[in-house]
Image 1 (cartoon, rainbow, N blue to C red):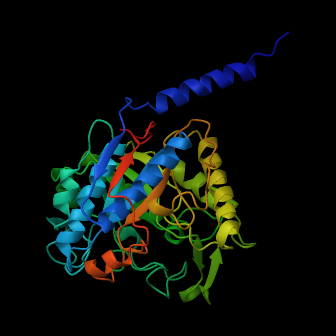
Image 2 (image 1 turned 180 degrees about the vertical axis):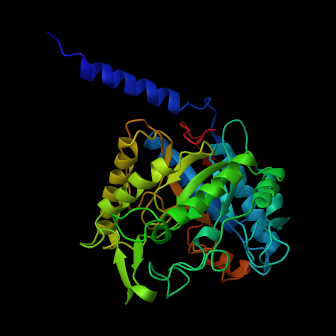
Image 3 (image 1 turned 120 degrees about the vertical axis):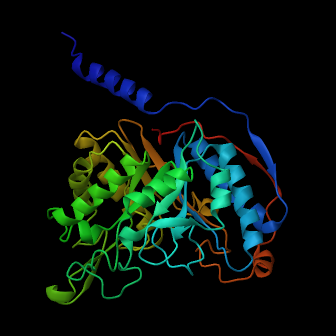
Length: 400
């Protein structure tokens, strides 16, 4: 007797994948021409990212893109506008950096409060570009909400599981009126930052119910405003264990003996079923996996193993939502593929998008220390061509 069970299971899995990953209507390539070398560098980076996606039959996502509104504002806005034109041609989902409870002097705020501590109700200069290149029937666009990751280890040396910060003072999640304001500005997608140590105060331990409740409230606010959400684990591959009442602070690194790669899988196996809000359309495994137990190619291999294990854990629980997988450094569009020549995730439902972060300064850091004139002089020789051929993305997983 022929055993038909495995074959039937395979057919069903392929049917699920076909439903979950609608193919975009084929679109012709587009040639986009720009005005200067910095604009060309930015657009060439996206061309590199989209070509990698096409070669690997993969879907992509730009989780962060940001530029300053203070010095050389007009020039950086012009770069952002041509960059978004390129993203439009490729069909990339994008969430701009950033919105939320930023101080008035933060130059990267797309939307912020009129005064510190209040709801988001003011549009910054960047909003004009973001809103000009909004969501369409083919892709979603929006902003990052990062306040849930404020005062963590990337900016606070005393942060740890024993000193996670005070909710409402050191970090927060936005109010219902803030979500309504964003929706009124045309935002359709929010990348919501959460923190590993706050949600899981001990690796392999239970989730903190108070913090989980705050995240769930934020998702309810987004749902009420009609927004879609990507839950972004806004960490970097390290884990601040201890501090405060828990004694000396120890920095653990994903892939070492104390924080093996299975720790990230355990975290997502717990969080995924806890976030059953219909507003959540995607799960971002790890913001920027830069602080791992090894560097270079060894670090990239750690990340490839950790991200595959996390995808497996999420799918084992029956979750079929999109999963966003960042790359190991360098992960900006111009350098994408250096550490990961090939797509590495095997997803049984075919709903993974590879996530890159785009900043226009010479090192892609988003610090924008140099003047625009100096940035022009910093473009490496030979400069990128001012006209770039852009390949539309063939598969889209971030859908409503």
